Length: 92
Image 1 (cartoon, one colour):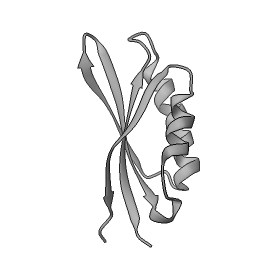
Image 2: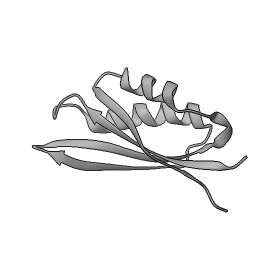
Image 3: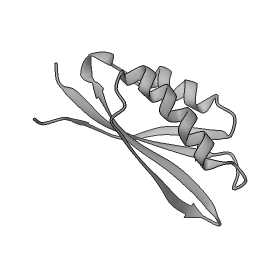
Image 4: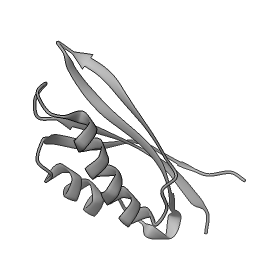
């Protein structure tokens, strides 16, 4: 099976959330799910000082759905919502 490239957006619960620690905790959960640490993170402005965390990572297609991973990250302190915004099959 191939690998897939997944882009996930994490919205913090407020502008006061420490985005660096939330990013680190989310990356640890993603690494446990995907079995690899091939990730790219970016903090993107949303509105009125609120910023979202976007994490792009590679996962084996055999891992299947990310619903469990999304629920685990959404349950973390400081996370308001988690959404997979893009899934693409890796070429190469």
